[in-house]
Image (spheres, rainbow, N blue to C red):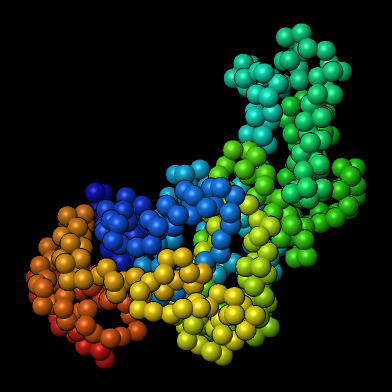
Length: 413
């Protein structure tokens, strides 16, 4: 391992964050026992979501319990399985308006690639292969060289694009913008200079003057009132373009309850309630979505802080709270407790295995004993035992074999 990668991984782990290098992250992940992402992959990404279903989940847990770790691994699984993926942090992305989330997701999407994917499928339905075209040549010109009459070919292309426009699952304005981009890509109807960029910007919810949109027959903009319908349209289009769906991971949702350096809340009461209402609508509207998996992760303050957390907005809390509570984690619940998952799998044996992996991957020389891990696991504190164990392994290794038993002191946490 390169020294820079190792140092960056150690610094991240000491801050209580997962290593940024995915190979290191996977190497210290403890397989099937280590988290919930395997179940989410098998039951949701590979099954329910892939078949057109949609789901919103909330993941809560103590600092260092592995929430971000879980999101990163699930993101990687989703990418591998053919999903469009998007990740964000609630401290940077304002969530009180759904159009902000829509815009952030579309910003991460290459619209030209979507247009190309849809057009390649359309060319296939005409009995041709996109690979037959010369580089830089559009389909309309190439097909005429093969003997297709221009008028009939233009009509056939338009009929295919009209079918997309008539799709009831796709907003008419959204379909109109996309089909115009497709017609331009295929060469059957060219856009004027700059109009392709205007359509792409409109799809990404950029503010545009009405005079730029009028020649394109678009007379509305994407805002907080219609962003959900546009998201549903985008999801339907993704599947038509060959993708399995969309996976969105939003971390640090507990920012809703936090205060900045000057003591001011990052989200005021009105903005926080707007976020909760937006999430409530997202939960309720998911019946109209196809192939979308949203996960919002944050600390347990979201549950325990009754004045600012989920419980402060009853309309959302009534929808996500568990009807049956217990000591075992429920992977199918809308509200998943990461601390219960950790409690179930994180044993002394797991700690010893984690120590060995960290020694091998990060060139450490930690040799903590079983009784040391017993001490760390039995301590009750604001931090997860996973974080305490990781910090102890690194600390003992850097101290040359000496270990300060302060890690077992509740006062330090």
